[in-house]
Length: 72
Figure 1 (cartoon, helix red, strand yellow):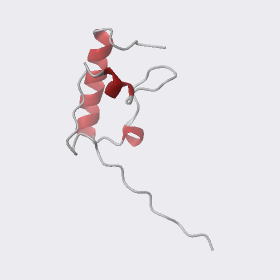
Figure 2 (spheres, one colour):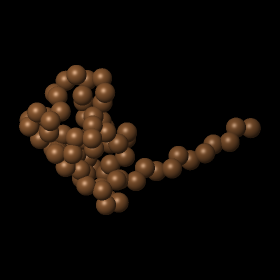
Figure 3 (cartoon, rainbow, N blue to C red):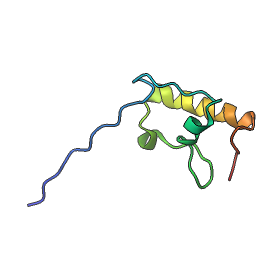
Figure 4 (cartoon, rainbow, N blue to C red):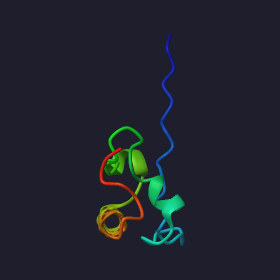
């Protein structure tokens, strides 16, 4: 008989106290895909809805300031 395990729910990093800033390129790169440079969805990043919107805005600012490319 197969046993099923519940996945541990991801905790939003920003609710836990970590900040995301557009000037911190290494942190921003964790929230974009490697292939095309798209912003990763909430189910992958583990961010809550409020902070996912914040992440998206910070990524867009970093792209506009030419800190990260729009596409790879």
